[in-house]
Length: 219
Ligand code: 5RP
Image (cartoon, rainbow, N blue to C red; front, side):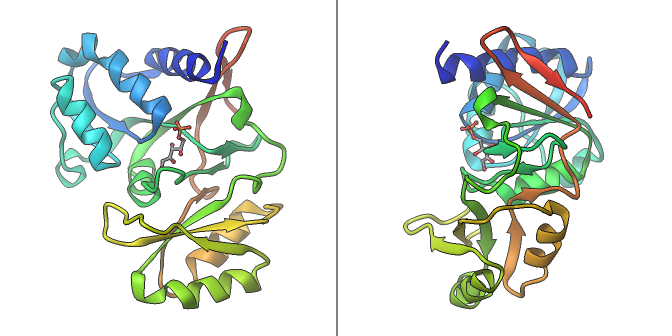
């Protein structure tokens, strides 16, 4: 199976974790795109979805699903989203697609976070994937200097503006031994909007597409 088939397999398994009705939380990325496609035949069960990006909103609307504002949706039963890396505690690195801030907000507002990925995303120590940090544009250089003090090598994701009008710094060479601590430290830098470390609010369920079938990890 290639990586896309493994992503689709994880997305298919996630259908088993959905409530029968209500409003769904939907993330961003190629794995989630498979999930949105799989929602098409069952969309009638749901009042709509809250989405973490303009791209996912468009895709949801294309299958005929109403996209709702989180402010009027209340607490969500389930949020389904992908990840760039996960450790065995289901702490995640997210934001490869630049949607980390809205993703973190929806994850926080959801009872259950179901993360879907291919098996290559599971690692012992996170940090090989560059850690995305969304920053206010005028703070870019200042935040980059502070990230260097924390041991990283930040690289500006040029020609990319987030859905919130901000910039992304991708931080290379971080060996993330204490994800909760690092998340708090980076969040504390003035000018940081969000760091793409999801440790304080990890996933509740990780579904990994695997050669031997989808594997479900619940710590
Ligand atoms: C977007 C994300 C994605 O969930 C993450 O990048 C994984 O993407 P993909 O499913 O394409 O591998 O965090 O901001």
